[in-house]
Picture 1: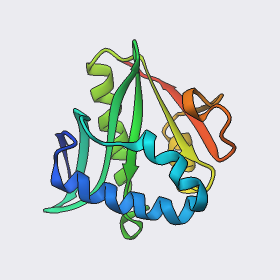
Picture 2: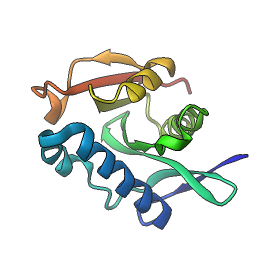
Picture 3: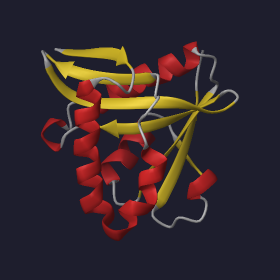
Amino acid sequence: MLTLKRTDSNDPDFQRLVQLLDAELAVRDGAEHAFYAPFNKITLLQTVVVAYELTEPVGCGAIRAYQDGVMEVKRMFVPEAKRGHGIASEILRELEGWAAALGAQKCILETGKKQPEAIALYEKRGYDKIANYGQYQSVENSVCFAKTLSN
């Protein structure tokens, strides 16, 4: 049974999952990984979700304010052995609900072209591709998405 915990970036399970995420991205992104590191800091995130199967942490994600009415989805991760079981969808659903409760009308996010599983997840969950925003505007490896939230 999957349970979701709302927490913050001080959560040790979240921190461990993010270490696994960063290790995986370092391999997938290769030399480009260093570019992304400054945009993926996890300090001071107040809106984090960690998923558990019994007591085992099996996924995470976070949101942060991007601009008025818009939250950015960050640090989505499910270890490879746990993928394909709907965990990421449940985390994303929880984050979207939390964002809406905080007054956001839209969620945006960036992922890499070398992460086809992530792209498939976001498209499945109703996210539409948008022009790359902010620091990702001229980054060839980046794909950005947005979703209007229903309150």
